[in-house]
Image 1: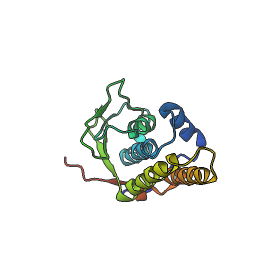
Image 2: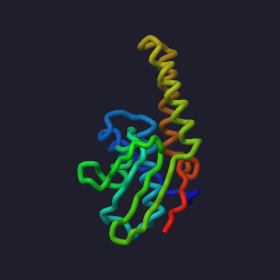
Image 3: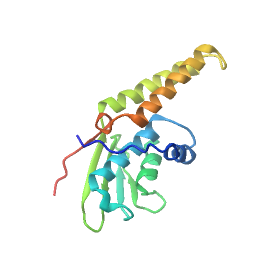
Length: 161
């Protein structure tokens, strides 16, 4: 596991993710957490450098990764391999230094609980107290993902030379 990163305490980071992605969801937040953790592994000297990334799943996490790392599909420095794995490889093309990070079982469990709550909520009448309570619990889970210590959500993997 990696050392804890500084999760953006500035709400404008999460607001920017909302604007980019269009809605709040676990995977966009977890993508941002993956990107931030990978940046921490590479170190602060990478700030402002053009990095490259590969993510092994086609999910909402891509928007979070793009926001956190500045790697984008449009610029071609973010690649997607739809292997169904929540793993991110981030590297500096000049130095070849790289970070490999993945979501933990705990992170995926929070995402699963969110999806379960969303399914229950969708079956309830709009405006009902039960639906409002479900939405409030969903929002709590999203805040938990934003604020949780990095090692509970993201782990590093060994990198072969």
